[in-house]
Image (cartoon, rainbow, N blue to C red):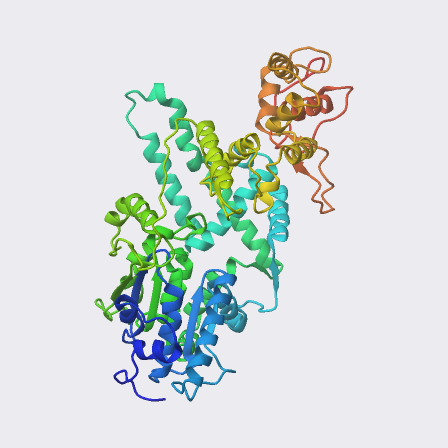
Length: 585
């Protein structure tokens, strides 16, 4: 391995020898940056992928590292494939130009996704934390089935207070379990935080509280529901551990556990990957950031990202990762408070967008840039940027906006000599039906990408609604859609009458006598459909559902009608002292 030395080949010379456009001064500063922690704030369309590829070429042309010592991580498999292909193509050109004589095409840089890298670490070193590297990896469907079984078999008394169906509870448990892993937090700490939050809300001065009691009660929901959901999430984790299974989302946190349990693994990976390039760094989750910092802090880590493009907050990502990069990667050990200096670079020339588009984008992003702790420069147009205009409208309603957009598309398509490429992006999927209806009225042909678009077609929505009504007793919205639709055409007045009848039925027994208040309240708290399975058998057919008019009526018939005993589960029985008409306590 050659010693580190001053660069002999510049980025300009490499571009010239390969017949590529010369890098801008900003790109050259990134490409020729010395080895060490560095942060690159790259705006949209600023050529970051090309710059990262050129960085690899520069390192190899100047013999700073070997190709196999470079690790590139990005967020999606598609992005990893594109980055890896571009690097391999450029390295082949570099070798043919005589600037990388030692390059072995069979030993290229490693380019992967963040999760795939963590998965490989886990598979190679699972034994350090007592795990089976060849254990089952649960897909979404398998994880759902296991979580649902945990919920169905749970004997937690707090379940009755949730007033939710089993499927909804299952989804909440899955989301919470994944969130605990993505944020690398202790469930006990979360429970304590929820308790403190509830105490704070309860301690608010009364003042006008009675007028806002509904808002206060809603604010207390997390504090009341989190404890039981945390217990179920822990039971779900234990169930996975019991069958030797993991989820893809678990592998990052387990890889972090390995780096804590086996410091030699950290040293091995640091020696293997002397240069690390982190793409789309603003979308990394908390646990991913901790894993990477544990492995590579203080080393030659270059992170590339844009705080304005952070879109995965729902899975633990945070644009604050860019703000905290110096803290996470600048230190070389726990005693070094200052750590290695972190260089900050910027790529602010946009090669993708026209001048007017950038003016509008900069105006929208200005408040975000002002609040960022890392410097975010204003995007500048490239020398070849177009001057196409940006038209704006400010309608008062969604329907007016959809009509205006449809009219604009129709005018643009009719004025074009040949059909141009055209696309529309919506901020929220729930608004898409309004735009599709406007396109149909205006006679604008369209194609909705993805399965989500198919589900918004009226015929498909009717079919999905019918299936949900058959499956879920709580599918009231879907039932109303069917009843008011073209098949039955029941008007609003009749629907209101049906609702009134349903409410009357849920308070009366099959003989039309009103149920005692304690019986009705008991059924509202908890309802179990079917009989409990024998204790000697293990079954997942025991279904728990939230009280609805339909499910309550069937349960009352089972409990109160013709002497048939009701559910045998103590949690689902009406409770001590509750009686049905015509029976004794």
